[in-house]
Length: 285
Image (tube, rainbow, N blue to C red; front, side):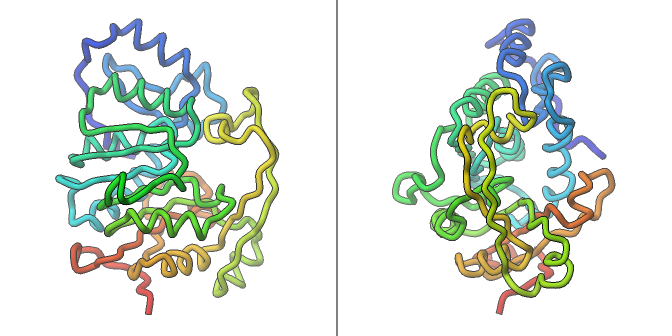
């Protein structure tokens, strides 16, 4: 897969050894982000899952060309919101792609500490990270965003309907959703014509958990809902989006869950007239 992340000149804010030590102190990171001096946030000796190495580039390869198409071919001059930004990989990528302003939010302070380390290292002035619950987002305070990235959070929510309505209030045009789908094979194969949600009670995690890079925010048992594909589309329609596409995994080398239907990416548009170039597989009626 082609690496879409450009090389970065070294910053003088930290020496190479200082930056490497800071990365190792905060590792593991969920996104492998290129840093100055040829460093990366991916630290093999601290990694808990191989997905930490592949997650960011996989989704860029799979979805980024379609996201840019939905945004008229470029992020230049656009405001981007990255919800559940984790350590900030996709926020950084959007900022490097020319967005005028990128806001990454996450509820977990450790992820925001990681993201701010990355921000300092790459020295992007159009990038901001805040520790914030998505339900605290307020259009009157935070404004509207041309593009909202909603990666890896929908299936974690206790209240997916209210959460999507809140996100829709800030999304002026394009919303990109990447989510795990319901892991019930018969429903995915036969009953996908009806919107369904699978409720699960998931255990809390501690610092020894293999999935600590995505579940640190969940120290106690949590109730969450995994959708099927039709439920995602229906919820996006209900939240005010009129053009919705589920992306097909057309590139090679992605995580297997994209090919077996357990993970999917959706692009939703409110105002197609603003971005006439995109061709959508699904149009709500």
